[in-house]
Length: 339
Ligand SMILES: [Zn+2]
Ligand SMILES: [Zn+2]
Ligand SMILES: [Zn+2]
Image (cartoon, rainbow, N blue to C red):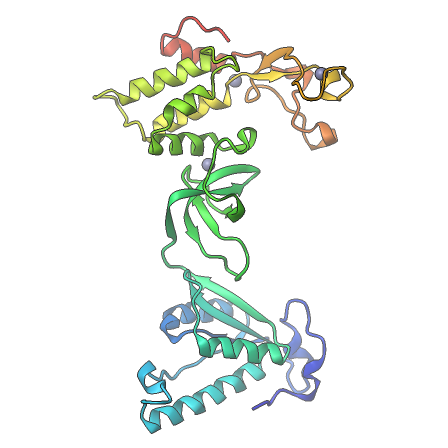
């Protein structure tokens, strides 16, 4: 059945919201028809409420035929006939709509009849949107690589995308929400891009997986010499591992302190000439370190600096070890290892 008006082949507006108004005889609000498995009926009611509040006329299926009666082979004749009539009625609703909204939960599931309705709407040129509602996220055992606010995080609670084909969204172990899962990178690996990895996530994963030694070693110098940062981190781990420590090792308190050590750990700086690539040092070797700075305490140039964004401003480059690191070292009675 196709009761769509003759001009249905006309171009549909980008947002799909005004096409109803383009139709002869209809100048009212946009008409949205909900599709989806009837098992998501409570979610459909939620979406219907939201769409109505947003100013749309909402159409939806209202009569439910139990699955066993829908079966064309063993269902009873009356049930089958009703299902056929309801399907035709639902298609009529779709045909008079400005857009179709497929409602599902976080599993992203919909069934065959919904797939057929999506194809029908598309054949009429009616925009199809998708709305995944609520539900429990999938908790992954090994956190995945995720990105949010320019940093890599360890995503562990993962929601399917609102639109099929988009990346999954997750919650990171540090508590950062809205993390986009970078599926191609697989499991979270703090060594993938050290400079842009969330310290809280790196320490949390290290504590959970028993790889704290490796994480502490990353704070050591290139020659493996124990730096002040590595010694402070080791002292924090030792203190929080003792029985009777105020907080457990995996408590956010411990993670916050360890992340502070990482953030304020010394970063080697090279000369401006080296930074510009105007030096004579061979490419395969790294340029010599001219100073150690704390990037967390220093001022890094902003977007105005173009390609130099994120470099230490000479006006405010704080030498390492900075006061934050020294204060922690004093608290944990670290003496030697002044760098
Ligand atoms: Zn994080
Ligand atoms: Zn600092
Ligand atoms: Zn150089």
